[in-house]
Amino acid sequence: MFSEKELNLEEHELREQIRSLSDHQRQYYLQLESGGLKSPDRYLLLNRLFPLGLHHFYLGRWGRGIINSGLTLGGLMLLLGTGHVVYGLMLLVAMVFIEIPQLLNARHLVHSRNNQCMAKCLARAQTFQTSKDGR
Image (spheres, one colour):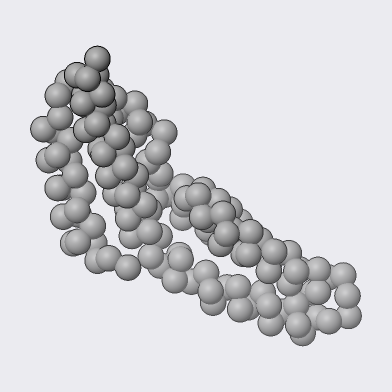
């Protein structure tokens, strides 16, 4: 996990590189980036309102989302559908403790993911001009 200072520095360096792109490359970069960046506020909202792991799906972390959803649903089934109330409660409490760091580090997680997305889009945009020059 990166600190906020490191994430901001990385973002600043990426933005400097984006500014150095040609107009065509910058347009292409903006097209790529437009759907890729995620909102920290939406991630927090999904994390708080829906304990089923939807916040993981929002960031494209499918494995974590499926595990989180499965464990939460399993805990609810044990709690409500069977006589194993204690096991259901233990599973749900464990899920809460697992998700607390996700909630506390939400802004960092989204910022880090957005920086990764920006870096991928930048790399593709930098090769965009090269492929056009080759024609």
